[in-house]
Length: 403
Image 1 (tube, rainbow, N blue to C red):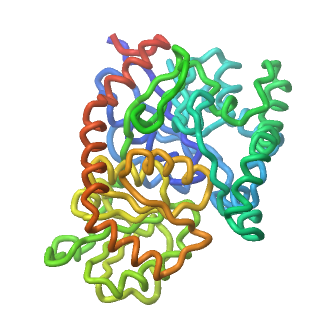
Image 2 (tube, rainbow, N blue to C red; image 1 turned 60 degrees about the vertical axis):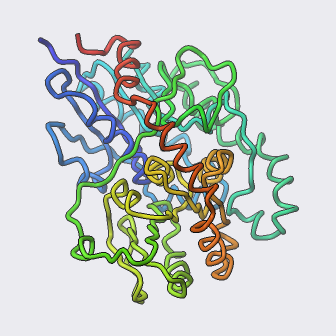
């Protein structure tokens, strides 16, 4: 039997864009598929388990990515995207895959088509042109200059123009390579692939008039395969356990405030810094590690505090655990809209975070039966999605499923 060759490509600007394709790669049998994974060397340490070949592929730095988000500027310029296409093509020509699965590697919409390779793109459903959204002003200069009550309607008014401006470099790239211009709406460019897969559930992000080549995968959760810290096995169960992880998307500076706020409450706190520095002063009720198995940590917790992003909230909801999202960028606010819509969490602003409000919110969530019931209901919803079978169905639709 000839194995189908599948190449996963991650734009390694945050750990989330690496973790999701890694999780999907584990769902494909090495007996039926020859697996390849490409991402920036900074994240190569996570591509070490299983029979999968790693390929280094340059990405912009996380710092540059996060700075662009904070400033509300386009993440990529044309020169960067053009260099991406050149790097993509060298990789694709060398691997010669039967299908390419990309997570936020926007250049693949051009490079895979140039080589006539089937391209499957992963995007969250809340970035889809077919999913209605309510937009909240993220932590950008506008929110710092004005009260949120004024900044919100201004942001919603200018949002279409901002999405159009963010689309300019990508459409210029397309024209340079002879591909048609797409609508000047960032969502349309994110959703440009032969198959578009949403690592989400329709119950949280319902679509209207969804095209045949768009499909929900269901929740895609991933945890790093790391040695557990010694304290993991000895945590007492006499107090509620809160799991805190702010991810790799630039909110690590909030961790000391959060720890000091929670130090005054009758609970225990376990923290994963997602590779960021461990704070100098750690309260007695807190236990900190660079990385933790997020799925197992969520299962042990009564509450998760995170940045509101999709990977962390999915880990919590898969375990039936409520989520307190401390959102900063637009992606996190959009994801938290889905969590709030099903009643499974609360959201606080990262740029307005106050210790007293954080403590009050945590205490309310720990005793609120409706929030926990909603989270447990979402755990049941998540279980109804067979992500592996949905991935295989997508491969079959592009002619890359093993016989």
